Length: 153
Image 1 (cartoon, rainbow, N blue to C red):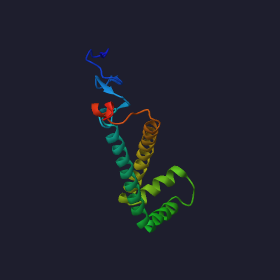
Image 2 (image 1 turned 180 degrees about the vertical axis):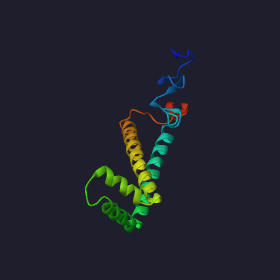
Image 3 (image 1 turned 120 degrees about the vertical axis):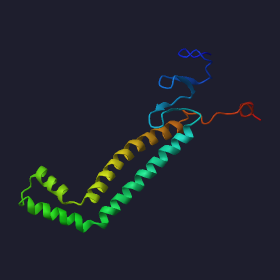
Image 4 (image 1 turned 135 degrees about the vertical axis):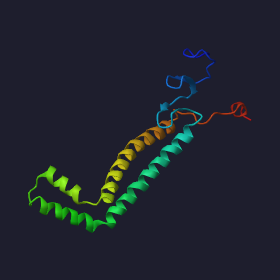
């Protein structure tokens, strides 16, 4: 058949992507992170990309946690100084401001980076689980088959 949007010949099992303005075989979705459609031809590469992002986020979280752990005495000292400066009163916004004021910048950066990595890890992990589930249920047919594989040679 022909594509109703572009008018070009349309392969079997193809869908039109409104973003790319192209027909893609077994279109799963258009991914803004790779600025490309994910379909039969690149599903394996997309799964590898997601796995490497998860691995990178875990690596980052572990190393940020290690940096904070190695400076635990500095963090505890900052908490003590903040408590003294707050006058022993539990005013959460003021106490938080004092803690952030007393913690060294590199540890604060490690905590912020770790928090961002946790958010990315949750989002990408959910996308990876959904995509793997989609592939495992057989809703994706794998890489394109050659004509001799279809014929049974």
